[in-house]
Image 1: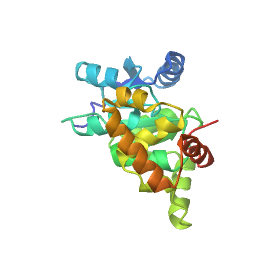
Image 2 (image 1 turned 180 degrees about the horizontal axis):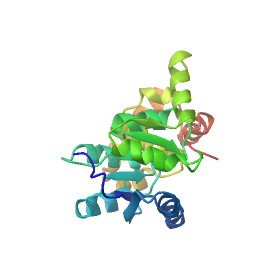
Image 3 (image 1 turned 45 degrees about the vertical axis):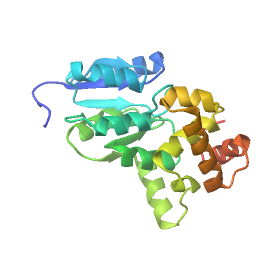
Image 4 (image 1 turned 90 degrees about the vertical axis):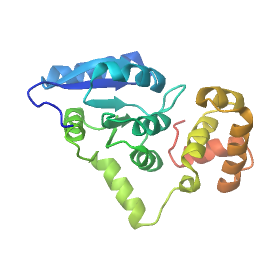
Length: 218
């Protein structure tokens, strides 16, 4: 269903940092009277709980959050009827994250380092059902296709990639199991498969790979 253009677009902001949400709320509402933030959430689980009550037109969401991460949240939203379109607003500037976010159901992907005026533009595009990528992300994805520089993480399944990013940040198998609502043995199986696919011997090598390819920041 297309949003009612006579009313402001209703947005939900999802980021685990309250000050970041406040900044984006101020940016959106002060510069764009046609945009209104109607709710905020600190993680994916909170978003899924409050979403039915908001009647929002667009979800603007970070990917790296504690608990239910952005990619898993996107998958769960995609499984719902009448889920609003999602614009991912992320600090990740590698090609693996935007590609997976788009495959998981996001309609747009915007780097947090993009020019501030592009955020309202991206929100309006996604609300209208159009795909949106900031120019830097679009160029990186295009170049990776042209020069064949696919990331080694393309071999990982969606769930393996979710586990991998948490392992690369130093999370334990038990912590990841609790965050993703999986058994430790299932996470252990994912860890084994991840190491086999990436040719890594231990968790430290996984972290180095993630740093080298820009999946996480030092």
